[in-house]
Image (cartoon, rainbow, N blue to C red; front, side, top):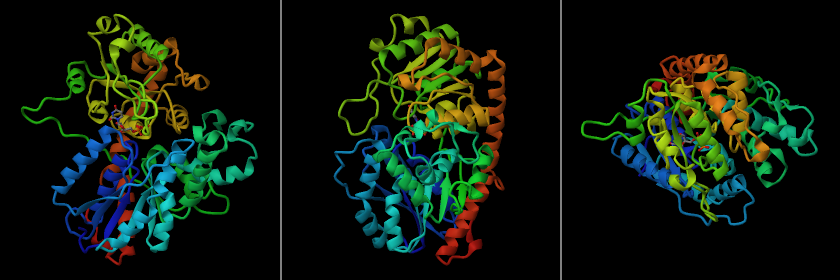
Length: 491
Ligand code: UDP
């Protein structure tokens, strides 16, 4: 039951790349509003019954258990299940229609709260729910779990759509993403390349984000200053200024070190037996890590020939006809080349299932990260100052790979053949791993930049840092909406 103080309502998209960071950021916002101590505000989370990965379901259960026993004024509300759309031609289309079906339940939940709603914060894939908040006259903020560069592109998209008659991928020259160097069209997110139902939804979001009271972006202001300036200067939408952007990253919840008698995870224990900065981690997000057998062999060859220590999160195939495209556990004996495990047993670990990536990343042995460039993974890496080699696989990851290498300089370039299903040759991966882990000027520069990024990330969340200040500003605005004193916020 919600209490009588005003509440901030979070509506997350229940997938691993969106929910955890939104919840952590929401909690910090709630603390900034005085929720952590003074009781000025409560937090309400509305969960959709998304087809989640088993891992995320257990994370959500853990989270509810932990927070429910924390004594904080946080309330969890599961929305009724809806029938899943069966005829969606793609992930974006599926998600948008799925969320849209929740509108009456969200309306009922918001109307039924016993607390006045200070503000609604909805994942940016939930902009169809803005109709509900408009109808109920509630301020709505969008939560954007990706980079500011992706936000700039999405905000720019409706105008781009009018400027370009054909498919964006066929555009001559480069795409103008405000604040970024010219972006080759071949690096566009998959759904934006050709016009169709998935593309249309992204254009829709671009338009609707402009209606938000503000956009909360999971980035660090100092990591993407030019793009954020372009958004603030109104360079994304001709003649219109975008809603205020609040940068709130990083908001990582890393499990505490195991207590007495508790065994560390096998990956963590293995890492702790390796020298500092000696291991290259390969992990590809919630949907990646499952490669066709020839690609698995190329990776194995590359790792073997590189001579470096490695921790490789290898996943099995995605079950056919399954609603949620999450990979299964890998059968390593079947997938890996004969003798590979034996030959590399002194310097490598192949982990065949979901790995505790945040905890892994925190171990001093991790010296480089071959990543699919999911934004959470990128920020987890930068939080620890770990340089990357980008291997983009889906969504907007090619754009981020470009940003990591060409704008931030925190990654070494790696040639990924998008036309061949993002194939990487063994020799190229071997070269990138060697470069990342030591032997090149490029690797040295990436390490230096990653170390700088680590300092920026850490400063951002300190008192007076950009993310800290942003959250305070947002908290004051939300408190003012519900008539609470602006100065009521705690730290
Ligand atoms: N993750 C993890 N173990 C895995 C794979 C992924 O803990 O084996 C976590 C990772 O740390 C990150 C999230 O899942 O926090 C994935 O989000 P990201 O934005 O990196 O990629 P996405 O899954 O959205 O493509």
